[in-house]
Amino acid sequence: MYPAKFTERLRQQEYINASQLEAALNSPSPVSIRLNRAKWNSPPKTSEQVIWCKDGYYLGSRPSYTLDPLYQAGCYYPQEASSMFLEEVFEQVAGEKNNLRVLDLCGAPGGKSTHLSSLIGENGFLVANDVIKPRAGILAENITRHGIGNAIVTNNDPLAFNGLKGYFDLILVDAPCSGEGMFGDPTAISEWSVENAALCSERQRRIVMDVWPSLKENGILIYSTCTFNPGENEENIKWLTGKTAASSVLLDISKYEGIQEIGYKGITGYGFHPGKIKGEGLFFSVIKKPGGSYETKKQSFRKNDNQLTNNDLKIAGNLINTSLINLYRHGDIVYKLSLPVEEYQFLKNHLRIIKGGTSLYKNRKDDFTPLHELALFCNLRKNAFPSVELDLSQSISFLKKENLILRDIPRGWILIKYRNANLGFIKNLGTRLNNYYPTDWRIRMNVPNDIQQMLIEWDMTDSLKMPE
Picture 1 (cartoon, helix red, strand yellow):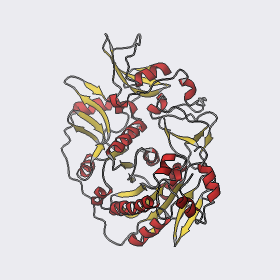
Picture 2 (spheres, helix red, strand yellow):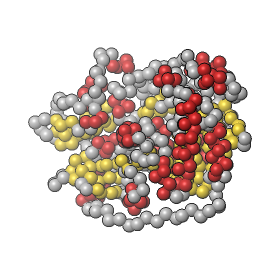
Picture 3 (spheres, one colour):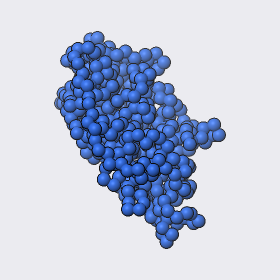
Picture 4 (cartoon, one colour):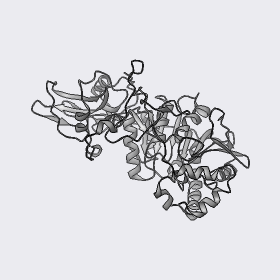
C-alpha cells in the first residue's frame, strides 16, 4: 500500500516501530474538536478529553460541521489532536509571559492560529499568515468565527517578514511537508516521493531563514511538520541551529505516554506516531534565538491621522464592552484593532493585510449598519441589540441565507442566536426581514432529514453553562 522507499526508510528509523505505525495508518484517524471557551463551555457527551489540551475532546464519530450552527458561530473548531500539543509547548515556553507578539507563519486553515489566539488572550497579538491567497481567505473566516479579536490575517511570502526586525516574541512555523503523518488519506500517499520530500526539506529551510530576522533575541521558534521524515524534521533543526547559533529547547513530556523524544546531534524533537498516541503523525521542535549577539533595531511608529469622530466613539461604546482604545476608521467602516493604530499602520506598510481587526459597523448618513464580524465578536455587548433564538431548522435556513418568517419581533436590527450563540444579523423593515448573513459564507449543501443525529450532542449541565 505504501511506497517502497517510504517503508524502507521507516524501518531504518530506530525510534519508530514501523509495523505498528503502518498498521495504525491503515486505521481511521481519531476525530477531535477544540472548544472555544470564550463562547462555549459545555463538553460533548460520551467524549474523551485530549490529555495535553484542556479544551480538546475526541468524538466517537465525525459530525457534520458545515451544518452545525454552533460550528458556524465559532463555539468549537475541528482540530487534529496531535496538533493540540501546541498548548503544552506554549505553556512551557511562554505561558507566564504577557503582551506577546506572535506569528503563525503558515496558518491556514486556522486550527493552530485560533488555538494561539485563545492561548495569548486579549493582551496578546497574533499575526496569522498564509502565502496562498484562497487559503488566507479561509484563515480569515476562521479567525472571524473565533471572535476573540486579537489577530490580524496576512497573505505574504515568508520573505516579507524579513523587514520586521526583532518584532515577534514567538513564531510558529507549521511547515509545508511531505505529509507522511496523513497517510491514512490516499491522496497524501499518491503525492509522496523521495524527490518531493527533498524539495520540502529545502523549502522548509528557506521559509525558516526568511522569517528568522523577525524573531526577537531570546525569542522562541516552534517548528512542526506532519511527517516522519528526518530530513524534514530533526536534520532541519540541526541545520538551523548551526546556521543561527540557536539552542534547542527541551520540553517536559513525562506526563504523556507515547510521545517519542528524538535526539539528534545535540538537538531534540518530539514525534507523535500513530499506534503510540491517539492522533495523526506530527513532529515538534522548539529552538531559542540567541541574545546579545547584535542590537535589535528599536521599532518606531509614526503618528497617523485616524479620522474617528465623537459619534464613532459613541456608537462603538454602545456596541462593545471592551476599551475604545485602538478604534480605527477606514472609509465608512470602523474597526476594533488589537494593537495601537500607529503600529497597525507600520505593519500595513510591510505586509499585505486581508483582515486588519474586527470590523464593527459601517457608517450611513443618519444611521449605521452592524457588520457580521460584530455579531461573532466575543466583546459584543450582551444587550446591544434585541435578539431572537432560533431552532435548528430555522438556524440552518438563516445560514443558507434564506428568507425567515418570524412573528412578533421588533423592528430594526436583530441578533440571531442558536442555543444562545450568536449567528448574525437580520433587519426587520416591517414589511419584510432582510438576512445579512455573508453571501460567501452561506451553506450550499443539501440538508438531510436526519440532521439532528449528525450533530454533536452536548453535556448541558447546570455547572457548564455558556459564557455570558
